[in-house]
Length: 465
Ligand SMILES: Cc1cc2nc3c(=O)[nH]c(=O)nc-3n(C[C@H](O)[C@H](O)[C@H](O)COP(=O)(O)OP(=O)(O)OC[C@H]3O[C@@H](n4cnc5c(N)ncnc54)[C@H](O)[C@@H]3O)c2cc1C
Image (tube, rainbow, N blue to C red; front, side, top):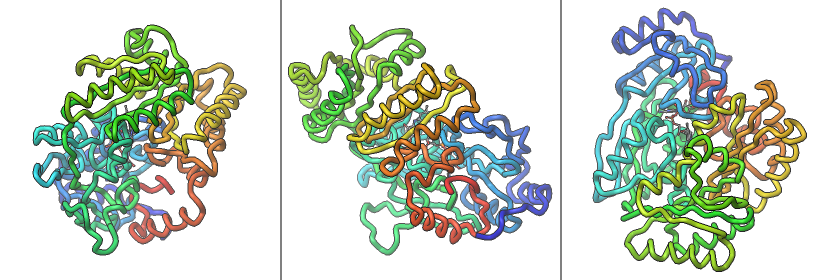
């Protein structure tokens, strides 16, 4: 890669961008508002030099062409719900916001595809699919604010990976703009297309370092007749794993979510986000939230009797099945509140690691032991998308300065067999730890790709690599 970018004259660049895009498309940092200063991680807030708000792919291309020409670094911003610092500006960056490139352009109900602009909120995409009698199954608690472009850039996971995979499995095509302003349209609505390299994958999960996603072609699935939600209390981690296996086998692939919560997290979440209302009469050693997608009434009945059998077999100690959407929302509430709860624990730090399930109990014991030795009896909450081997940890710190000490505890314990980020991405916050989960050769290849597609290093510099 060429030497670090230095912008010649930012004022002249901004004047050119105002002339190209119109004065309301370029807001000086202060006028743009604090929401452009930091993502949901809340770490290292910094105002951008200015926020540029193009209205179309052609305008994104015009912005990048000019920035590339003068070596001006750009940070791409979607809904700012990311948790890895990727969309948080570094000093003197321009923020390129997708907030005005929004809308669902078309839905093909027979073909099962949907085309949307990158700044469209995920909830809007989900609603458009449902209006056509179909489902876009990607689902995150941030659905109202995160954008489909951000979901693609981070290869978001969420609650239904167990059945539908990550965002990557739901993306048929991508239109993206490269750092030099070249528009690459790879928007094919076909499931099969082996004509050479699958270039859309360059933009899925690469966190805006290789191109700006402007449009996506998505794969829709049949809308289930009903989503049946159940909440179960079990004795321990072993019982959670047995419940997961039995529920997957017993629902013939219809299990769409399996969320685990350890008692310290569940108790805290119930107290602070659910008005103290516990779903089950007495405490248990671990909890699971299960969602089964029913095509017909018989699927609900089968799911309920499966839980009954698992109680008789002693795998489940107690369980409740929601009878309607309100009850389902109440069962989900403690799990969905994770993002809000962070605010009450400051200073705190959140992790999203993954590993093979068999390694998880020993890993968690190791981390808890080391955390207790370093931070005493401060809370270390554990919960996560267990069906995907994805564990979320939230640690309350004695001092914000302890973050690096706790990073080391959490990441050193998984080196060689786990991932430092299962779904939130590397951004800036996990960049120092990439080598714990990727080989030197893998990182070398990533650098070669970055240098080939963004030779001046202007696009999301300092993220991922
Ligand atoms: C309450 C809550 C719950 C969450 N739950 C989950 C979860 O279950 N699973 C999960 O995976 N994540 C989860 N997240 C994290 C977050 O919502 C996702 O990472 C989401 O995909 C980010 O989308 P965004 O539009 O907000 O992106 P941003 O935060 O704006 O950006 C994220 C990254 O993508 C880049 N980017 C954004 N838009 C584009 C684009 N159009 N082209 C290129 N690069 C782009 C940015 O530069 C940045 O590096 C959660 C967050 C919150 C606050």
